[in-house]
Length: 314
Image (cartoon, rainbow, N blue to C red; front, side, top):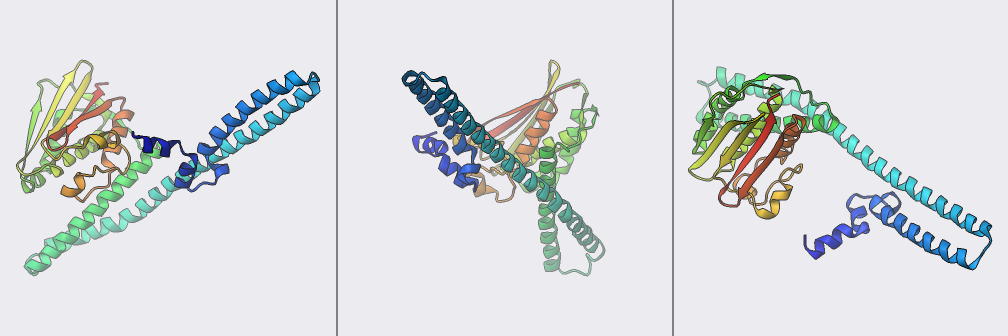
C-alpha cells in the first residue's frame, strides 16, 4: 500500500463520503474523535486537579467528560446499526429480486428448448442461430440469478448444508462430463489424476458440487489457445485435497489479495472473457470455510493458476 492509499484509508471524511454517511453517523470519524476527547479529558483533569484542590470541581469535570463519552459511544453504536440495517436490507432485496427473476427466466428456457426441439425443421439457419443466442443469454442470466441467491443465502446463514457420504472422485467424473462440449469449443484438454483408494467424505454434496463447478468453469474459460486443465485429487491424512491447475491468463500480483472478494474481477481477465459476476470464488471459499476446510491458490500472470482446497473426511 503506497502513501497516497494509506492517507485515503486514514482519512475519516473520505470514508464517510464513500458510505454516504454524515459525520455523526460515521464510525470512522467518531472513533478518533472519542480518542481525542478521552486524551484531552485526561490531561485537562490532571491539570485542573493540580490547580484546584476542591474535589467537587474535579468530580463535575469527570461527570461532564463521562457524559460526552457516553454520547459519542451511543453515536458510534447507532452508526454501526445503520450500516448493518442497510446491509441487511440490501441482502433481502437481492434475495427477493433473484427469486422473482428466476421463475420467468426458467419459463423462457423451457419455451426456447421446446421450440428448438419441435420446430427445428421449420426454422431457417438464421432463426436457429437466433434461438441459440437467446438460449445462451438466458442461461447467463439464470447463472447470475443463482449466484445472487447463493450469495444472499450465505450472508443470511440460510445456505442449507446436508452432510452425506460422498465419493469425491465419482462426483468429479460426473461433473467433467458436463464440460465436454465447453472444453472442446475452447480447445482445452482436461486431465484428471486420481489417487487410488480415495476414501468417502461426509459433506454437503450440492455445496461441493458448486465448488468444483466454479473452479473447473473458471479454469476452462480463462485459458488461452491450446489450454490445459489438470485436476488432481488425493488424500492427505484425515483430509482430502483437490487441485485445479490451468495454463491460462493467470492473476496479476496486485490483484491476488482481492481475488476472494465479492464482485471482484481481475483486470487482465476482462481482456479475454467479459462474462462473469465476480461471485464464484467468494461463494466457493465461503462453502469450503463452512465445511471446516481451507482454500488457497498460486498464480502468475501469463502462466496460469492453481486453486486448491482441503476438507476433512468427516
